[in-house]
Length: 110
Length: 114
Image (tube, rainbow over all chains, first blue to last red):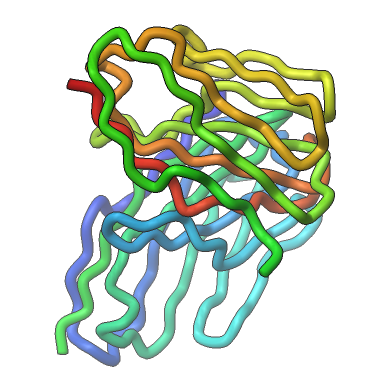
C-alpha cells in the first residue's frame, strides 16, 4: 500500500522567503506525482504534475522535483507572498488511485 | 468552463436518509472517482470508474453506491446516512487511469449527517 508523508505539517515564514515543502512515498512504481493547493473550505487546485519519467516541473515561482528511486518530491516556492498561504498536498498516482499526504499548511506573514 | 461540477455544495441529512451527490465532467475523461476528506485522515478513495458501465471499490466503500451510465456523470449514493459519513466529498476525473495524466477535482460537497 502506498504511504505518502509530508514534512513539515505546518510552516510559517515572512514574506519574501523561499518555501521548501517535502513529500515522500513508499512505492516508487508511480505513474506521476501531483501537487495541489487547498484553501480553507475550498477544493483542490492542481499546481504541478510531474510524470514518472521527469525529474522536475516549473510554473512561474513554483518548481517541483521528483526522485523516484529515493521516493521523494520537493515543492519550491520562490519569493513567498501572503497569497501563498494555504495547505499544499502531494499525491502519488498508482494503479487506479491517488494516495495523498496529510498536507503542509503554509502561512506567509506580511 | 471545462471541469468537474459537483452538486450540491452543502447538504444536511438526518440519520437514515438517503441522497445522491452529483458529479459531472465535460472533458471526455474516462476515469472518475470519489474521495472523502476528513480531519486527520486526509483524502480517501471511496469508489472509482474506468469507463461507462465499469465501477470498483476504493478504500472506504461501505455505505456508498455508484453507477456510471454515461462518460460524463458519476453519482455517489448514500444508502442510509450515518453521522460517520459527515465529511467533505470530492469528485475527481482523469483522461485515463493508470497513466501519466493528472487529476482534476471538483469544488466539493460538504455533508453533515445529524
